[in-house]
Length: 338
Image 1 (cartoon, rainbow, N blue to C red):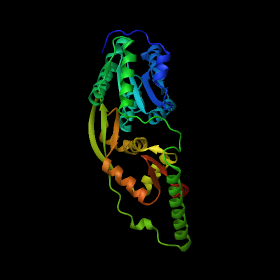
Image 2 (image 1 turned 180 degrees about the vertical axis):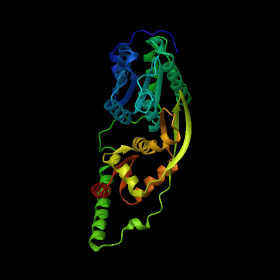
Image 3 (image 1 turned 135 degrees about the vertical axis):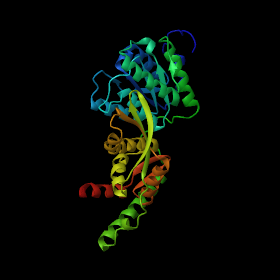
Image 4 (image 1 turned 120 degrees about the vertical axis):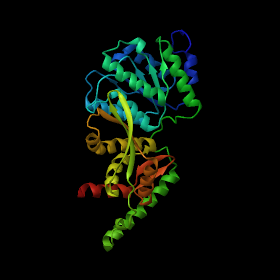
């Protein structure tokens, strides 16, 4: 890292660099103890780069709704920035810190992550909290690398270099209004396909034809990997869930009522599956403090996509997935019957 830089100011030159109308979303995640000045410097730096800062800092007493809002921000962002101070921070009900849990969620999305260690700018807590923080940092270092700051001015240079590299390598696509991800011709084709599929379904119901579900292939087990958090350590474990196709669709459908990138809805599906698996995990690991980094096997996830796409319940264009009209009708029927 280079030495102290001249304080950053917004100049005409800075604005000229970002004449492109494309904008990016960055989710900032940190504990409130990191300090308002650091967070403000980061927000200003991102604004000068054409990046909109989103996300919340976690207070000492973090509520469930704040975690949900942070999840939304993480899912919508093009990339994430984690500011790690000298403390592990507030714990969730599962015993895992909210900052740690947010990092696992961001990792599952597969989107770029920048971790900035700035404990030199904040005050540590007790020994247990420090041990947890160090365990989290070790994991972050293993997956992403960690940039360490000794001086506030270094933050701007670190962030500018990170964002410039992302844009130059086309690692982030930027924000686009819903509907621009496919051409009018593609949307018309999908609409006609959905109309035909709806007609077929109505004809089947009218003629009392046998349900096609009887001939479906047996669903594969939902193999997954999860890390068990205990005494500041994370230990990977492998297991599986058994759910029929309709139970799986009941989990998938609500996630795709609006267009989503594949990585986003896979991440949210994994969150839902973790909730189903957690009671069994707690029986198997009674002394664990929590469970993080739930990863559904990629081959199994591909089978799920292929199955529901073949049935016409999902469709995708240019990496964006959505529930089809047929799929939405099926989901409504399923919801009413259950």
